[in-house]
Length: 118
Image (spheres, one colour):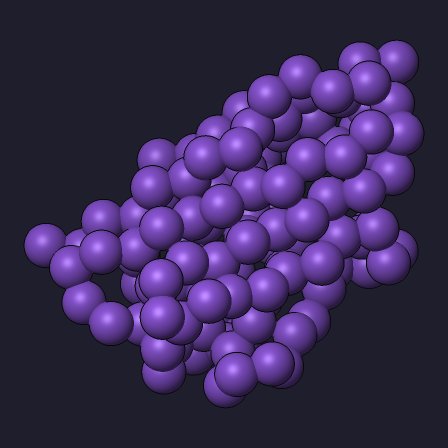
């Protein structure tokens, strides 16, 4: 059974940093795309970042160089380093994995809350 477990969310001040982790289990995902999405209150879930085929990455425009996605295939884990956080980054962040880098949504985690205070 595939399971994705996120961690690292929390409360941080405007301009602060957080590092999210997502540990996958149930199968090996080294050949899969791994990504992050987020959903703010009252808004639809949106794409944040994705990594695939080793070191390829792609980010949403709003990231603006503030976030970095990375992965450790030996640990079946994907990370999201978030710097210069803004109040508008407040959302539940979800890890997702899929066979297609443009839509890495075959499996989802349960989400982790990120709250940025002004």
